[in-house]
Amino acid sequence: MSRPAGRGPRRLTRWWRRRSLRARLTVIAATAIAVSVFMAFQVASELMDGELRDSAEMQLRADSRALATTAERAGLARVELPPYPGGDRLVRVILPDGSTRTPAGQPALPPVSGHAGRVAQGGPADLMESDDSDEEGYLVYTLRAGDGAVQVARAADDSPINQFGFGMLLIGLLCVVGGALVGRTVARAGLAPIDRLTAAAVRVAHTRDLDADIPDEGGGEIQRLIQSINDMLAALRDSRRAQRLLAEDAAHELKTPLTSLRLNVELLIRLDRRGTLDSALPAESRTRLLNDLGAQVAELSTLATELTEVARGDVSDESTELFDFADVVEAAAARARSRVPDIEVALDVTSVWVSGRPAALQRAVLNLIDNAGKWSPADQPIQVRLRAEGASAVLEVDDAGPGIDAVDVPRVFDRFYRADSARGLPGSGLGLSIVQRVVDAHGGRAAVARSARGGALLRVDLPAAAPPAPIARLTAGDSAVS
Image (cartoon, rainbow, N blue to C red; front, side):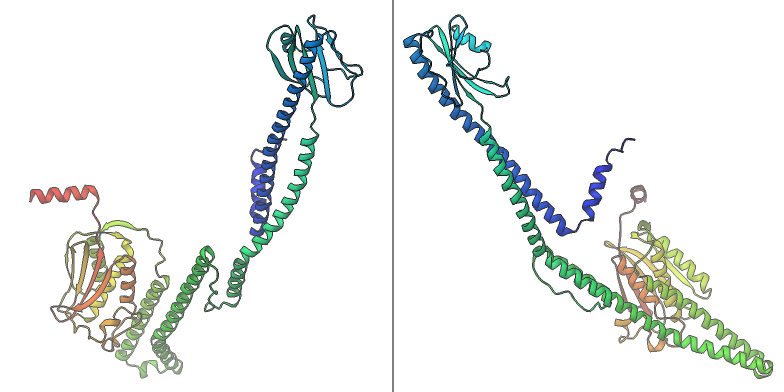
């Protein structure tokens, strides 16, 4: 059964990823040195082989010229060839008829090649060739002499190259081992800050102590990494502090309505157990008590909803889109009228396109209208205005109430903050803080001022966006017609 292609590389990749960074650096250093030694060996072998060959060829040419001079003086057939003294130098005389003469006792040379025969017959003046037809290769130089030619050959000797290669192999192994040791030492020294950083991060994870910053050391990438982790710890500290404050504020805000609700319910239960509920509580008082219970439950429900909104922060599954802010404002006003029919909302809105999350902005506008509804007299409508002002979409919610005191203005958008004059009104103190968070998330700005009617004027500025192309062309056409 054939193995699927690519499984081997994938296994190697998984194996490599499971290795530690120290082991990877060690392997990389050893591999780099091994490759460098191999490349150096190849280059040095080629250079050495070339030098040895050039030296051998020069020696062959010199010996051939000396033998050719002697052969021409004495004649090819009569030139004296002393017995073979041994060694790697071999000679041969090629006569005009193609026969050869060799010294007595000399090992046999390979047959005369066709190219060498043409030199003896008056062709090229000389020829350098290699003959590997036998087990032992020869480098043969043929030089024309008289009516024939002389040849001087030398057996190919690879022993210097082999010895050099063996020496380079030993050196390479030593270099690889040394490289591995050096790589491991360098990796240990280079990763020491990472080890200390890891130990500090593990300590923070075990102790849950986010106040313990990791000491800054080194420079470059290590310093940036430590700074990033310290920034992350600072963000986690801020998040934990915000959660703790939210829990404390929520517990404080929940205490009053829960206490009131518990006392009223205990009163009803105690009177019911005594059988004196009807006599102790007249119908009018009982109705008033039940209305108070309903209001307290509604207040708790509103507080729970707003706490959920605050706890979620900027986390939302709603995607950002381009939309007409006027549609969102009108939808929020419609919801406000349905929730509190006594509220009168006067709209003066124009089409202004923005980019953001429609549901979040609708909740913010609804909170602004609800806040104004608590203060505005029953005979005075809440004025909601939307217009484009430069590159901004400007929303104003204007009520005719008593307005906001100057000492309360800086804290209007704080969580759970309620002015002294608002202590007796329903609400959790979270509505305007949600407005502030939504506006900040959309790159806008929320502010409070006094309106011309003497009440509060809450203003929201959001970055305006260009409408979609078809709508832009239609608007331009309408303007041209008008």
